[in-house]
Image 1 (cartoon, helix red, strand yellow):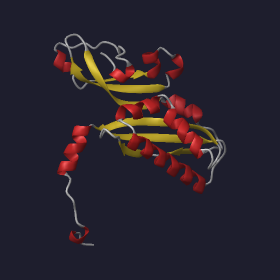
Image 2: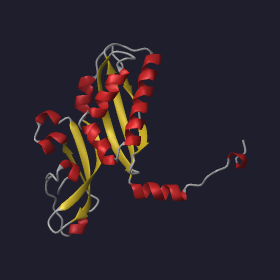
Image 3: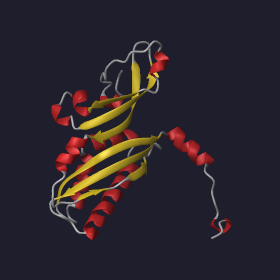
Length: 194
């Protein structure tokens, strides 16, 4: 089983099957550390789904990026705030993706500061999604560029210890998004009774 091109078609492992078609749709979980042979990146779990089968190899597509639970727990401190958000964005190539940024402050922030940081995170993730392709967005999350950009902006609101992208999930591919738009019904407000 091979990773997508953006991961240099790295080998993900092997899977038994009587017929090649039985592999289609299978999910495979690995860590970024295993892909890059860098143990410091073992706190990032990646999920791939087999979408194409060749003669002796199965090709996958990226579906999910997630930080491990133990790593997230190691970031939490008593007397500090954990601020998370859920943002669904549409990339330039029409992939719908849910991104979950999380920020950890140095000390306890008050409600208005948490709200301001959360809004800034949501705004920056939306901007990142609107100006990047799916592959570009995944790269900026995995390489930490998006989280460091959010850190740089949000630390002016309140001192932050760390910003991470907790999870990135592929929700819909371009053809699924187009199908949803076709079946969506526009409702005129004058047609709706209060």
